[in-house]
Length: 143
Image 1: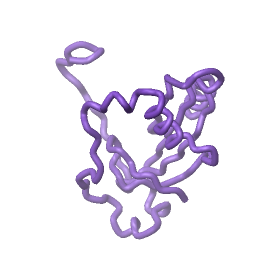
Image 2 (image 1 turned 180 degrees about the vertical axis):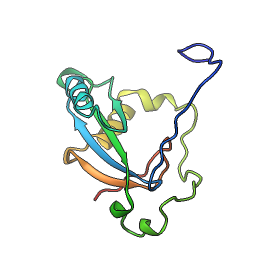
Image 3 (image 1 turned 180 degrees about the horizontal axis):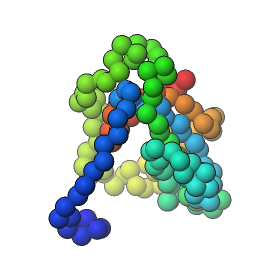
Image 4 (image 1 turned 60 degrees about the vertical axis):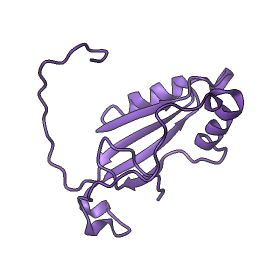
């Protein structure tokens, strides 16, 4: 049971895709207004999601990483991926504990997480092709 209540029936529509890879674009938004504008501008994206920093303060409140994705065609695959258009799902290499320790949420821990996600030299519009199936966490690779 979730926010929508109890789901009694569901219908899904499948889409034929050329490969199991996703062409990902990451946009760094400086605040919540920029994140919403980015999502509005990318309304035609097949996949879109934003990681929003709700604990930032001042002018950086709501800074975000907006991830946009499209199914990659065979012609877009590179680095050996062209030989495996539908890669087998693999077990995650890194797992996160279900409950993070409180230190992750204090000022020191939060600052380290934010510096990792928002480094000062990150470029906007990074493009990558991820070897994960839609719905799985993708590995970061840049082109």
